[in-house]
Image (cartoon, rainbow, N blue to C red):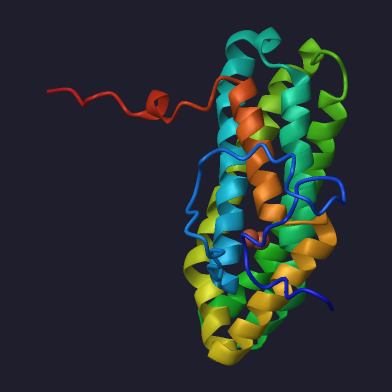
Length: 237
Ligand SMILES: [Fe+2]
Ligand SMILES: [Fe+2]
């Protein structure tokens, strides 16, 4: 292996193979202190921030359910298709299949404590999630959502959001801590590096950054990128 793919912010050009920095359109974002910022992401932080991306996808689904029921024509199928594709590639094929099902679940299943008892259900939920993603992709590939598919799609999205919110919450609070205790610090550090390698192999770059950017584009195309619009109204006095 040439470069150590352990650290994020690894000076990766976004496209092309040119090594020159001639055509960078970088904005003045992030620290530029002369030295390359190299902040290590631990394996559990990595898994949890991946959940962050997936939760943002769930939020888009949730908002789409409301819109579908109010005015189905206001929901562009291709935006939903993009969310489902992101969930497939980043959530199901990478986060679930390459990390959780290979490294996390088998270890936790053998560990003492209640965490092990969740693994079968969590695995079944991965399978059910993939079935629902297949369904969402099949419905949203058309130019418009057929009227007799609107309510079934809304129901499927709603159920998916409900399932995955619980799923990720249990993983964050029970499964990942149990996994961390079971493997110990040294293996955790090694697997942090391993996860970065898998991510680079899978996406040809920093998969998290790529997924985050894609999610931001989708939110913006749907008018969902202004956090303030989600601030709850004041309660009754
Ligand atoms: Fe999972
Ligand atoms: Fe997960």
